[in-house]
Amino acid sequence: MSLDSRLLTALAPWRDAPAWRIAFSGGLDSTVLLHLLARLARHERLPPISAFHVHHGIQAAADAWPAHCQRVCDGLGVPLRVLRVTLDSGASLERAARNARYAAFAEQLGDREVLLSAQHRDDQAETLLFRLLRGAGVRGLAGMPASRPLGRGSLVRPLLQVSRAELAAFARAEGFEWVEDPSNTDIGLDRNFLRQNVLPALQARWPRAADSLARSAAHLAEAQSLLDELALTDIERAQGSCNFPWLPLPSLDMASLAALTPARQRNALRFWLSSLTPLPDSDHWAGWYDLRDAAADAAPIWRLAKGELHRADGRLWWLSGEWLETPAANLSWTDPGQPLELPGNGRLEVLGRPPAGRIEIHYRQGGEVLDLPGRGRRDLKRLLNEARLPAFVRGRLPLLVVEGALLAVANLPGLDGSRQGAWQLRWRPPTNDQGLSW
Image (cartoon, rainbow, N blue to C red):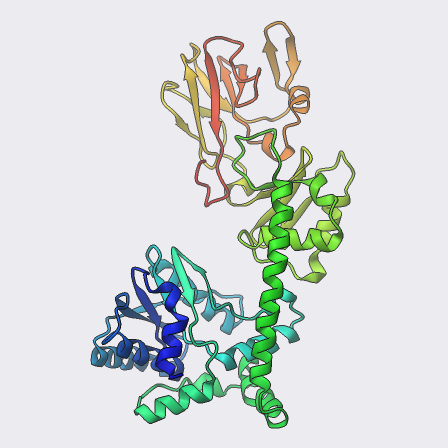
């Protein structure tokens, strides 16, 4: 089967996408992909095609690449957009460049649009070796997926079954021009060392080594899909019902998780956490065991890259964003007939006719007392204990104070003002999504 036909077959599931965007570095692989797609578009009904070139600005040679990419795209009639990025400090150069590149792509993709990237079979083999040497698990050893979500669209790698040699032979036969990245010869970079030194040695002894490694990655990807199915079943069982449905936070029932074997616990949590935070390596799962096995009256926390796991009210809770910050100080509420935006803490409103008097919103400091009809003056700490309110919520739960007296506690039945008159204090907490209110 020709390279054109194989590419078209690989892209069949995305033929109805609004647009195809090509990640065009100007190198050999993406040059072949761009030419193939431009040629197919002349006689096939394809989505509109355009290209992105990311300029990282980390080496002098790269300054000439946008102009080269523009000439190639102009010759093919393909629109090009050059994306200039700034790298974060701290990470390795390779990782920082990759993160910046995909962040730029994700920002540019529209709804259901597809970014086409030119990674091939040898790249997949390198990825498997690289991750194997880093001690990756099944998910990592599954290599690069043929497709995955990216921003509002998808990333698709249609050349994963094609070898680098085949792409190079095609490019030479067609007379294509491409740029060579000088950093590709720097064997101080891990992937280049694998590409220049390790894979050639393996292929000298086992000529089909890259094929075999890529095939192993495919087997592991299938195994991971089965593990994901098992995890989904376990997570669905652990969703259960929550005593606080107004808390817009991911949570799981601890008893359901504890009933699983340790391996299934880790598998379920990896699946659940994969969309929330970078996953911990095997040496850092002690945090889960400490949280799981802590005493019943403890409030353990497992801190991960982008948030924290808390245990409260028999559930496991994921906190990130504004939930990890202390809300602003007390506020005056001059117009309780209108919702009040709480800095760093969502939104508050009074349902019904607000109480008369000077109204302020406080947060718990300790020692507060609430006067309840028929129950007398009750210590707020004891009332929150009776409600089994998770500890991480208590410090940001809005308290309505009128003329210096605590009158209501948001969202808690019987404490939310409904016993005081024809009104109720309703709080919409922040979510984990960049602090947006629920």
